[in-house]
Amino acid sequence: MDMEIPFPLGAVTLVSALHTAYVARLLWKRWAAPTVMTGALKEQFERTLKAHKKCIAFYPIFLVILWTSGLFFNEELAAVLGGVYILGRHIYSCGQSSMTKIRHFLGFYTVITAVLLLSLTGTLGLLHVILDPLIDINHLLSYLYGEPKQFYFF
Image (cartoon, rainbow, N blue to C red; front, top):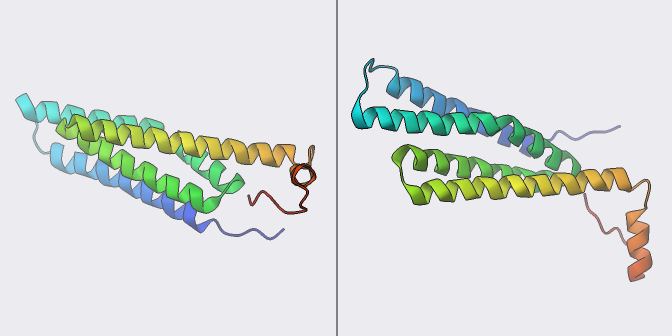
């Protein structure tokens, strides 16, 4: 069985891991030095740490749906949606740490949209793999439309 190397998915996974490490390094470098924080500095640190924790908590779910969508549906589309997720996560983190509501909500809705689309494409790909041996979907569609073509390209 000849299997291609999923380069776009690997690249998106690596970029997302590097982004997470970059944010963690910024938190350590910027906030580890002062031992006593008060006032606005303490509030900004707590907001930044909260945003980072939320992103870290959702990271394993993102990786699972990214790879499921890429392997079973379309690798390039999954890589693009993964890039949108990373961009949305960055916008969300910056908006959360600076208390900018518009950036915070824009990043949040960008992340949610990317996750929902990745979940949808992964589910469609899995359904195609599961149902195609049981119900020949291409044969059924060629019967309905009268053309013997390959309709699904995933």
